[in-house]
Image 1 (spheres, one colour):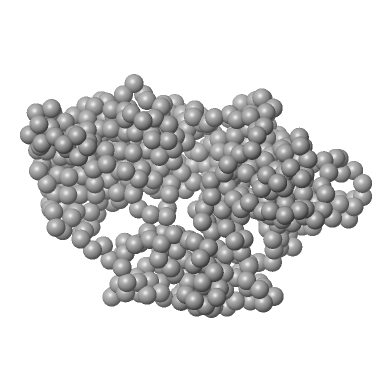
Image 2 (tube, rainbow, N blue to C red):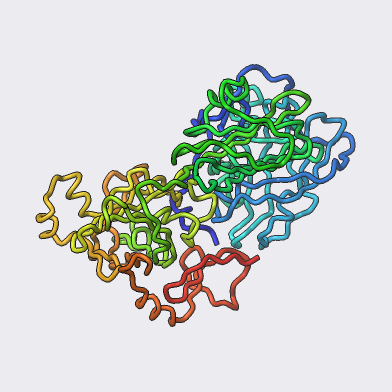
Length: 535
């Protein structure tokens, strides 16, 4: 059941100083992998905690971002029992955190197992290696660790503080920075750990532990849409019961510390709310915006919740055509398999628009987003839209513009840049249209169906490889424009709909329906492909 992207996961020896990716909001939001400085207020020791009595505090919540590193699942949150001991103030014992994990384990998880979260110093939190007992594919249970805990175990607490990889405990919530947690299989080398806690969009992702006595400062941001005049944007803020007030704001661009501080200082437009409500913001133009919600408790501002999103409600210069039928021919059809192995070709629906200035110039919106059967919410960048631009203004000479910023989908191989060989010859190599036509690299748009010859599309993995791979190796790529465009036809898909059902696991292996166990599967029947989760 492990994902195909794990082929590129590099085991690493954690014996030296490491560098971690950072987001932009860092003041007290650990989602940005902060590097705290200063000295520890308490000296933590690595020893068995055998004194005193461990007493239940009640039920807390554990959000996983360890399993996500190995398996194609989302950051799932579950209830956990948390205990404390007066002999060890600041240490929290989380009992069998994966006992209530939604997917079934091949092994039986010991309900009396535990992981100790050391928060003696709330600004320098760590935990050490713990066997979760969770085995999702029969290859062994997962072990989890924190980089700070690894350093504490091998070099001492002061070294972990100096490294900057500790987490924090604030308002009853334990958080760690991006890529500062670790995971490995129990049968792997003891020193070979993989980075975990990688999924950060600033909102409802990444590891966290909410203690039972934490105040309810939960905030959720939901973009509702624009008014009829398209000059106001309605955003629903769901407010936790312990928030005295919440300062909310909408700012252009990605989230930054400067904008956050300006909102707190009253230098940027904001509104204060005291309960769940819809707030209307001015909406002057489409673009990338960040939404902030800053809770207050005991008169002080607390950790911010933010959401960054590209909005296209005004849609100037484009007209919506509906949904095209897209047969994926980049990732599933690379020459000689390329670095991505075992992905089956899938056909699914993708929203499509046409330029109002250049009829015949189309763009697929987020073709590797939610509708792509292999995608999960952890795999995709939701801060902006990713467009596959197809120039079919000349139906005999169709090309796909280079997706220079990638396609938004993370399959464990870094950025994936997609485009056509025709576009490369025209744009990068200065060839004329007639020269490219002679080379046989253009696609065609016939009766609303866009196709390309074999091996005329390209994919590059710039984080790992400089040279592009040819793809569409067997001509699988196809876009069927919607009938509403006036030129589409669905006849080919109607015929394909009569084909038999095929089921695949996430390694691309066929599975019989009666043999399906808990996990994620790709179910294909003709042109229809869906993602199915079996609990």
